View (cartoon, rainbow, N blue to C red):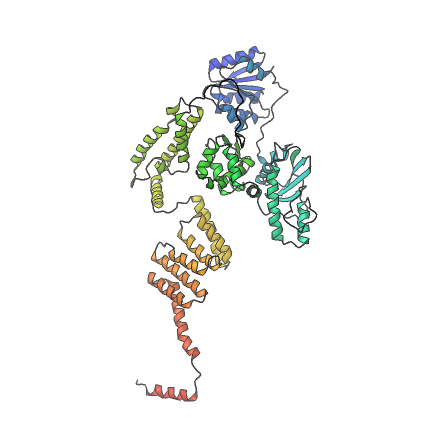
Length: 637
């Protein structure tokens, strides 16, 4: 006998299922609310939950996940209706464990087959959440279920100290980690193939480093070669088959071990860039273009500790609400194939780390296999005309400004009444009620479009939303980029650090940070100005090129123009070009008569010009001194 809880809001369906299961000899109770099921399961654990009605769709998947997190998980059978197409596939994508999925009205024999093998002695294993140090330390299983890159990413997030161990047919491999970096690798050969100074090939990172340094190899070259080799091997380790993987929290690297100077996520990204070309990624992901995807964000650490680059983070955030791979790539990288390389690498990395899960697509083949002869197949239903329209509209909405979404970007002046009128017009095009008879995919597309239009309306009607939007449109019309608040803050930090290095005359260090500030926020005038000035001082830019770019730099005022001219004059002065420097200082005073730097430089030049004749005059003789005395005495008073 199996303890069963039946969940359905409809009393008739609920009573039908209860009678059917009770007739099979099981202990059955009926519930109308999901919370009642959870309370009943906590008080008296059930072996099986049968959810039907509205709980056969997404709500049923959420219930199944919550039941797996209880001390004794319960199996779940979903009974779906006509509008729940694709729920079973979505469950596989999201890794939701289901006992089975049936259509209503449920077949008695199929339901009996799902219930009969299940008993109290066969509870389901809990869902592996891939979260937290406790899960990491209890992790143990086959390499297919626990790939090394994903385990290392979890160890990086929770800042674990220990070793990821793989005991396979070819031996034992240990990858020691500390502070989010790889410290030692044992049992892997070929890490020093790029160096000719290590002989024989060691299978120990620490031993190999010592051998290479004793052989006279420079330390930077050794670390660069080893970092690339470790990165490539970690990507290859994702394909390991057989053996067992676990995390050894007691293991410690040898004393004096040197950490790989790259965080684990960046190390994996480096390995992907080395081992996978853009063309290969485009072929592989092209076969999975219409595959659904699901996102699992880590809950054991903040976003700042994940160690992902900006492209991967943006793709991860955009993936929420995206239906398939094609839509995700079109949203993040556009339609041009040459622009998809970074997005494809980021998607491959996120999949490798387990943050994005994509249902496998059709295999890639060079030839098209002809189907075997068989009975005639009924023609496929015609495509829904709404699907292409909604997919195109949703792709255009991703990242668009609210004024563009409501069709108000070209108006010279916009009022709140205009926004309300445009919202009523546009929302009618995407309201979910207009496609209520279509498939679940089409309804989901309509809901996503409608949600984007609602968000645009709310942002514009919020306090200060309309002035901000009008300011954005004015900047865009003038050809100036608009920078997010996060990028603006990051550029300010880089600029302040560059100023400190500049005051300490570290031209090269300051130049790198000025360029970073300009990259993050090119709309702020001082960023480009200081990047050009420091580029000339650090010799990144030749003087002639730097002066030409400074001359062409657009300035907001005459005072700023004077600052630019003074800097150009200083650069000429450093090169010994005194005449060109004086010309620039005079031009600076013409632009701004109050510029103190130009005034000071011209005064210094005049004082030097007065002293120079005395310094080059011939030595005075007695005769010349007497002649000078008589000239002064004969001068009229």
